[in-house]
Image (cartoon, rainbow, N blue to C red; front, side, top):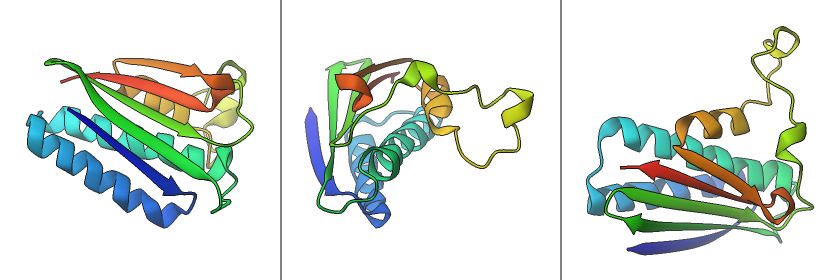
Length: 132
């Protein structure tokens, strides 16, 4: 199984990503907790691509690919057309000085909700693996 989606960089397009996740769940029948993890991590990744990567420039796209590695593992790839970023340079959102900051938790959530995560292409691509 493999599904792909390309959306313009408008936050309202996240609904298409949510529909894709629902479609994948209908096929694979994974548990509610996995579904929640996939939904939050994937929408965070897409939102980051839209807002931070592509600066909400609707002429730029965010590309999403969902594929089954094997019967136990789901691979989700999200890539934007922005300048990239260094995921190692992000501040820790759980540090006392960052607790009350509004943003800065997306990558943290993605790291903790996925079973494995990798950034590549200068931070423009994130791959997340979920054990289903």
